[in-house]
Length: 168
Image (cartoon, rainbow, N blue to C red; front, side, top):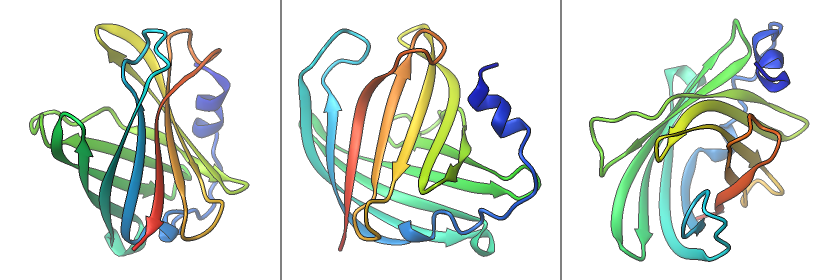
């Protein structure tokens, strides 16, 4: 288990329940995604999208509905986030509308010093990987999300998807 996971498991009781409050609302999204992941590719696809986020669980969670206008076709996806106050961590699940019976493994983490870091172990194309989500909030109306994969347990990372949000 790496140090990021240890810090999550050793969390003390603190309130991060409002960490995603900045994200409630409607957003235009500029996506940049690597054409091929974990293939030494440096060609990025750019496309637009829309995201609508609502609060649930009395503020201890939220979910969003996403429309992604990818070059190969438009699709929908949803994200579910919930906060565990006892552990001080968020869990994040992704549901891709093209694969409606598959829910991705939950990403877990928290915000510290204005940046959210979330991790999970998963597989990609049959290969074990570590996944990282980074949330940064340079301004309340322009948050950024980044996804990266690691094949060496988190020593090195390949950022493969970036979403820049603009409030509608």
